[in-house]
Structures are given as C-alpha cells and as structure tokens.
Image (cartoon, rainbow, N blue to C red):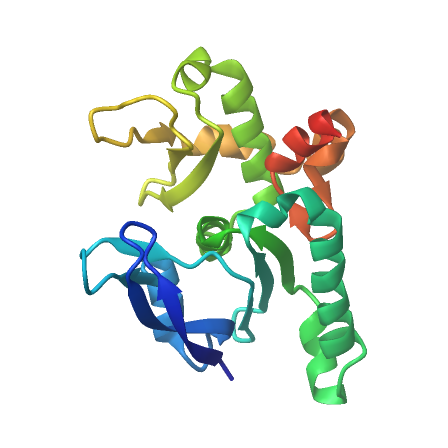
Length: 231
C-alpha cells in the first residue's frame, strides 16, 4: 500500500504554511494515479494558497510497482554524497522483501528493476527508460558522451541531462539540468536519434571498462562520474 502523512510545509517562496499529503512509499500498481503524477512532474508539488507558487518536496520515497517489477528508492538530492549508503539500503530492501521474502514474492526478484534515485526527476527518468524498453546503463553512457563532447553544455553551465521522452520514431529527447545561464525562459531540448542509443546497446562490458564508476549495484547514473572525480 501507499503510505502518506498530512504535513505542514513552508512555502519555498513566501514562507506561508502549506498543508499537504506527503508520501513515504508509493505502490504504483494499486495507485496508478501516483505514477501518472510522477510522469507529469506533479508528484509532491504543492501550490501555496498565499502566493500561488509551487513548492516541491524533495524527500525519501520507496517506489514499488510489482506489475512492472520495479523497486526504486528515491532520496533527496543532497544525499548524493552518501550514495553508497542509500544504494545499500535499497539493495537490502530488495534482498529482504523478495530474494529472502515470503515464497510468493521470491519469483518476482528475478528481472526486477532495482535502482536508487536522487530526486523525483531521476525517478521519472527511470520509469520513462523502463517503459520504452531501454537499458539505463546505455542511456547514462550516452549522456556522458554528450556532456563531454558538446561545448554548448559547458557554456550554459549544464550539470546533467534527463531523458524526457522517447519519440514515436525512437529518438531520445533530453532536457538539460541546472542551467546556470539565462535561456529566455525556454528549456532547450536535445533530440538524439535511435541509432546513437543502438550503438551503445550490447556494449556493457566495454562501457564499464571505460567508465567503471558509471554504475555500482543499484546506482546507475552519469552523476557517479562527478562523484568519482570529486572523491
């Protein structure tokens, strides 16, 4: 079941009190509207009754969808520095609940997507990738190449990319994250043809040999390369 509590939040913009229902766990199979909210970027986004501006709750959430065999632990973005601990928590949840869980749940452990995410945008991206039948390791490797190879990203002070959607033609549409310079209110979209992803597919060993920090257990993210460089 999905678990939530009614909380009193402070508006990020004016400080007024917002009474909102905040979830600590989401069962997307039983409550599909919550998955829809995540995909629409409206989950844990609350409008202030005083100023009308939105406040985003960046909290810890356990996301489970048994129908799609997905178990994702979501942590606040400022927990990224402690990514190893968060990843271990998610792994242990999967181990205890499925691998060593009640007999009916054990078969579900196989071919289950088990990931740790930092922030709701990363959770949304994992759902988009899985729904499109893609492999997140290849998507992250593709992003690493794009970020390193295009000087426009450095000029705009882009800190990362997020897969927004896969087009009907199979192209991957990314949005840049952390734009540090003005873009006239418009977020530029980067569309990469399916061929670029296909060139990554099947090269797991080669990609990890070249960038071993790209993935570790349930943590698969290009942001790991930044963590490795910093530490």
